[in-house]
Length: 235
Image 1 (spheres, rainbow, N blue to C red):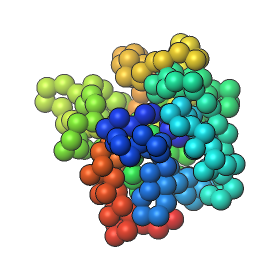
Image 2: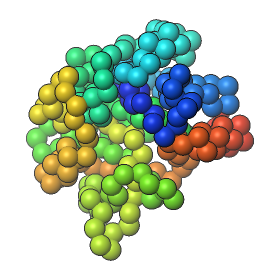
Image 3: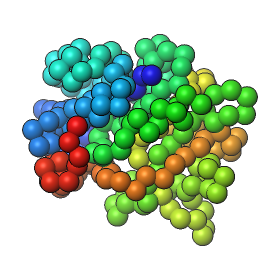
Image 4: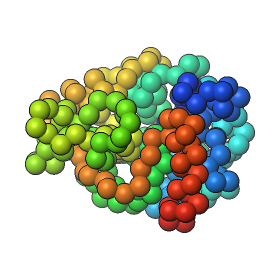
């Protein structure tokens, strides 16, 4: 099974830190932010990794190399300019192959057990089956994009009146067919494809109540370092 780490963003809210360092390489308790994902993926037995990059992307390649230092093998999907999430994944599909795969945002900090997604990932695709499976967490106390909710049938839905609002963790499993209509090499955000897939009943979800942080500000970067030092399970 392969996994993709999304690492192409500019990190505007983290400036000036990200003026000279791509956000995935920012230090969190002695390890690059993206390094925590690599460690946890390796620990889960997921060692074939694809990383896309754009802003200061060569720094990511130079820092991580082939991934051997983390016990993984890394292939890179360079983008001249960031293609947004769906566009970046669609562009990387030749590296990801024909089987379902995992995707994790490079700018989150979490103790999610990626091994827990393995069985669900393998079940994606086929007649009427889900093509995407999202990990959701109770709504954070800061802006994180469009609220979703977990329906009683295990499907993800846009959050409506009376629903329990949840945040997409930036952790998901996909069948390649989910991106069949997304052109490679062109910018494309993920939410419209979520909405279309949800309308077809092909986006399942699960609830995660563990440690999760969107490292989108300098303050939350410091919080991640504190969590890494005092809270998160070692890998």
